[in-house]
Image (cartoon, rainbow, N blue to C red; front, side):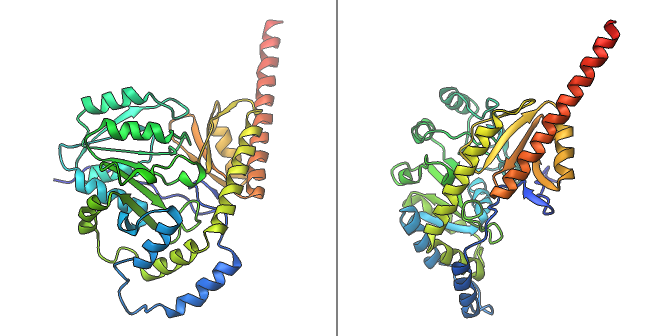
Length: 357
């Protein structure tokens, strides 16, 4: 019998790319020179180092972790799939949020697990106590959600996350793909909370989406079981080498993170003044919004050759925070949208007035 697998649509890679929350910046010239110098030293005829020791040590130093708490793979997506495959099977239940990252559904459907979703408010917020109660009632075997939330950008406080972790007996995985843009990480608590798992990625803040490097972080004793299930040679030698080099220059990444956060907050301040649209507070590298006439909005972005994320059959959309120039281009499109909406409103008003005469 054929499984009913939830599909995941890859993003368009043409035009100004503000649809996948990638970094708009390449590594610095200094780091690129170091990468180019290192590439010829890689034995491409040999399988990758499956211990990932250099990479683990570099990431552990940056994140103040123990290398034995880490497992790496082909993006945090692979780590999500590993955890879901470990804990779920036909008849078991994944408990997550609605709205959240659709890859959770994809992996759960691969293992024929049930998916129960707790509805969040438009801004991504939700009732913590009720979330726990509903999850227990639905018999959750695994809890997964992103923090900051994708797509809303809403971020729970670490105390709220730990309350959820302590509220369940099953594993609770927090997808922290965007946590570099916030300050509520629960990484420091993985050792003392045995059912707490965290996934992280180098695709967003670190600007290495093309390498596909992600991590699973958890209690050292629990990690042994996940390492035993990992796919051998999941991360190629080139990705390992480049990621390690970039991690050794974390100070460069911190500059980019601070700049992105500054641009995000500036954008949000400006967008509060725009009519016909609503935007929500964000602690990620994107802004989530909705509008009355999304068809017109998408048309204007397409005309400007700007790709944003459209959540089809809803009023909602998401825009990645880009470079200064890219953000200005976004504001120009949004200003055009407001002007066109005002023109339409005036025309409707004129038609109504003419009928009243």
